[in-house]
Structures are given as C-alpha cells and as structure tokens.
Length: 181
Image 1: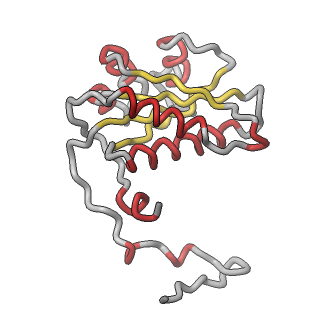
Image 2 (image 1 turned 180 degrees about the vertical axis):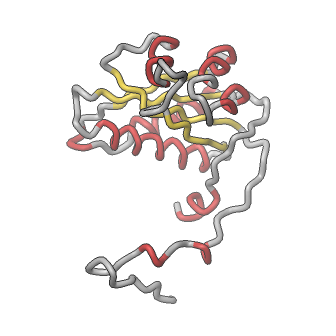
Image 3 (image 1 turned 90 degrees about the vertical axis):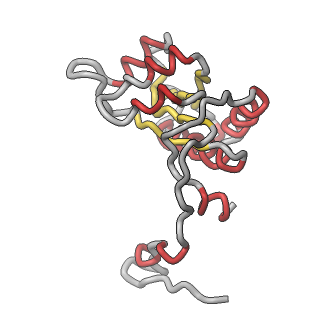
C-alpha cells in the first residue's frame, strides 16, 4: 500500500483508451467496500463513460474541471445527508479508495471538488450536475473522480520530502521522531 501511495499522483491528462468494463467493475466494488460511519453507507455513485456527458461535466466548475472532457471515465460521488450526518467524510473516504484502487490497477485519477463550488454566478456546481445527471435533490454531489490511462508521467513522491514535522507524539508540540530501522 505504501508503494501505491508513493506512486499515486493527480493525473489530468489521459490516453484516448477506454477503461475496460471489468476494471470499472473492480473500481465500483472497491468503492462499495469503503468504510463508513456505523456502516450506514450513505454514498452512491454515477459511473459516466459517455464522452458527451463527460464534456458537459467538464464545465461543472468555473476552474479545475475542464480536463474531465478528455478522460474516458468519471465517477460522480454522491452522499445522502438524510441518512448520515457524516456523509461528507464517508463520500470522501470512498473517493480516496477509488484513487488508490485506480493507481493499483495502472490507471491515473484526479479528484474534482464539487461540493461548495460554483458553475456560474447563480448556479452551484452541485445544482448543475444534479440537473445534468437527473440526480434527486436529496442526494448531494461531493466530487467527481476522473479516471483513465495516464498520458503524463509524474515522478513518485520522495520519502525524504514527507512532512514529518507535522506529526506530534502524545501531545501537540512534541515532534514525533522517525526512527531508523
């Protein structure tokens, strides 16, 4: 798992290669296995492979979603706030599971934040997507995970660059020390 996390980077350029159906099924299985508070599982997913819909979804935010039009797959992550008060956290966990699963299968991915973002001055990104995909107003749109075969290479994270100074031991202010093995 640490190797996957070191290699995983946000990918915004994808090859024009379709993600095979059996890989999409594995991604969905991974998302459905995501942990959730009290096992309520308030998340739902909309799998988008239609290129015209992906292009429309790429317009969901003022900034930061345009690259979705060139992705072969987008998974819209929803949450039901009527089922759980921590739907945001649960949907976020499912999104991260999608990221690491995609990486483990040789796919690239990138999170597109939707909740609390604007499509235009008068329409939120969430409202835009709800209308476009016919999502009921009771389901909240957390994010879209763009997925595909990477068409860019980013070097893995360097373990030497990890921010250990942000880790505290037993109480805040007592820096945790990395111990050599």
